[in-house]
Image (tube, rainbow, N blue to C red; front, side, top):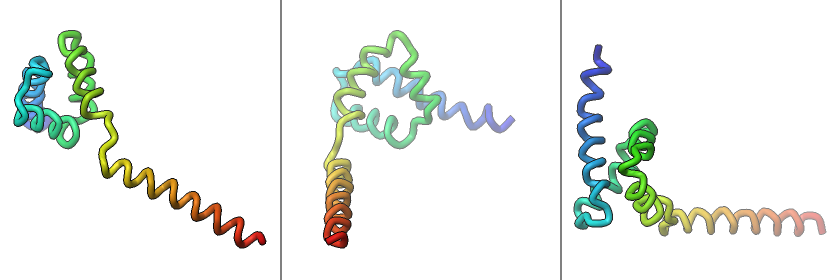
Length: 99
């Protein structure tokens, strides 16, 4: 019984984001920030799946995903550099210890 009560705000929020997404890329900066926050922090896999599977939202969803969601940001690049650097250091230590 509580699931129906708890899901109502989620459905309302998803509907709000779907209406904003339908206007993409014609959204202002505050609306874009709200959309990105929802996709990255609030939306469940079910929410994203329902949005992505809606034929009327397919083009704007793919556009916002390509433009903003799938892009690497500074933090992502930092961790990639740390991982690659750590690999090189580990390799150097292995080579040095074998000599």
